[in-house]
Length: 346
Ligand code: NAD
Image (cartoon, rainbow, N blue to C red; front, side):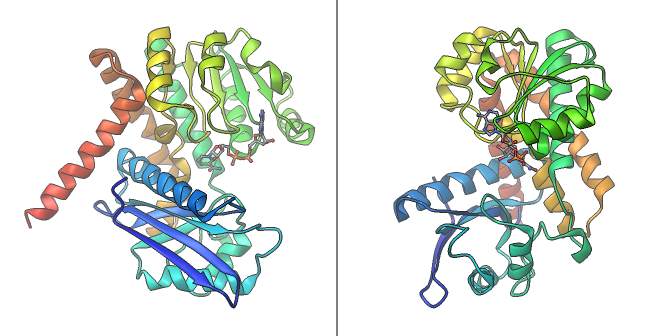
């Protein structure tokens, strides 16, 4: 996949086994979260870190950020083997890269873990607001998704308003909850689905107009917009065959089960797909802002620009007759190649 550097970290004393993947640093230091997971094998962990770090390169590039793509995985059960020493040892490995890789929170990690890592290295973001960090990135992510959805509405209906639209938000978690706030404020008819009742309750308590549907009924509803905000790979052969929506715009990573195949199927079915890695970049934008001295307003302004970038992708997709994800990938690669060229000419 063209990675610049892959670092295998091992420390028997603390039980740490980790892999740091640095995919590309042409635009800047490689930034991406650390995921802690009980991988079935080291090969699985390696595949995950290679795939995830490459994805970060594209997300940063299309978002206009001066960041490269990186990611780390720690192998093991976060509920069983994680402690202060293991986290700080990992922090020392991050420090050994001298700032080429900057870490953040991902699955299996907490803000407390970020504090431990921060004791050994400054190359970490996503630390609490009380320590000068950006805190929870979800509101910024939700705002960016909302902007991407409005751009898709403009393309589909000639007008960016979401008022009166039937919108289904799958996943009433951190991002889903804030996204629903924006949609309800704009007068959309919002439905939510989740597998946990307490998460649903949190959303309905904030916005009583929201209707709740069973998690298994997501693709049986007549809707205008589908917002996947739970897990990846929900866009597949089976779901596309049942979809009635005109637009897909949500926060989940890797929504297309198979990029090439399902991106093309959506194009042929006339469903406008706002690429996930473009419209969910608010979290990364929030992290980037931390590097410059955190400013939430600045992060929100940058997330707002997702509207224009999404519009550019959708216009080009229509003009060239190509799937939106393909256009977005191309735009990211073009930016990296052009910036590499100006650096070479120095
Ligand atoms: P979260 O864990 O807070 O929320 C996910 C929600 O989805 C949970 O309420 C969970 O119960 C629900 N869910 C799980 N399986 C489901 C199913 N089959 N049907 C319906 N609901 C289901 O996570 P989050 O932080 O809100 O992130 C949501 C998605 O967006 C994730 O895929 C995440 O990787 C992605 N994302 C998040 C951010 C961020 O800033 N938090 C940034 C970029 C991307």
